[in-house]
Amino acid sequence: MGMRRRLVPGSLLVGSVLVFVAGCGSMPDRAVGGPAPVAKPASMERLRQQAREALARYDATIQQAGGAPVTMTPAPWDPGQALGAYVVDSAATTRGGRHLTVTFYGAPGPASEPCGADYTAEPVESPTAVTVIVTERARGEAAVCPAIAAWRTETVQLDRPLGERTVLETQQGVPVEVTITG
Image 1 (tube, rainbow, N blue to C red):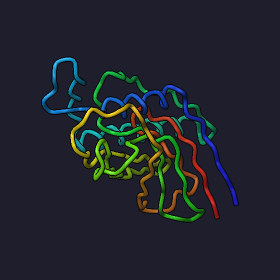
Image 2 (image 1 turned 90 degrees about the vertical axis):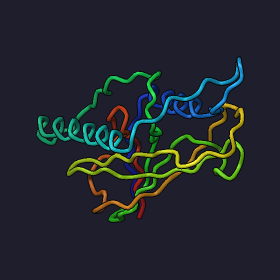
Image 3 (image 1 turned 30 degrees about the horizontal axis):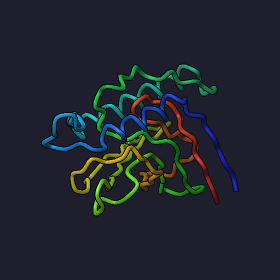
């Protein structure tokens, strides 16, 4: 059994909580003093483009380093910007497996519950890295929700096993912790 770990800057954790809290309590018709409406998330095509840009930046950095270990500098990020995708905190897979499970902060319950949400995940791959776009699919009935987040997971199928590829967080393009079992 093996394990590979990559550290995530603390700013990403804060960003993930900010993205979740921004989505909590959004109501189409807010009362005075109620929660502000959340900006509409980016389109899936824009999120895919952002993921491809993160992968291209990583691939170029690896190529310039000639395969030596690299440190990625996070891309500029504006926490006030509606990003439309959740921050992946970590990932897990099995040795030789094509399924990758990502962990992120999200609503504590499913969309069938008030303040709950369901999620979808989509991988974007390159020869040296993988990133997973996690988006909210549906939200439970509109309500003022407490700023409570829970660890959630989604599993995606890769075109080929992860192998030695790195898993990147999409918004800033930095590596996340990966656990490999089996």
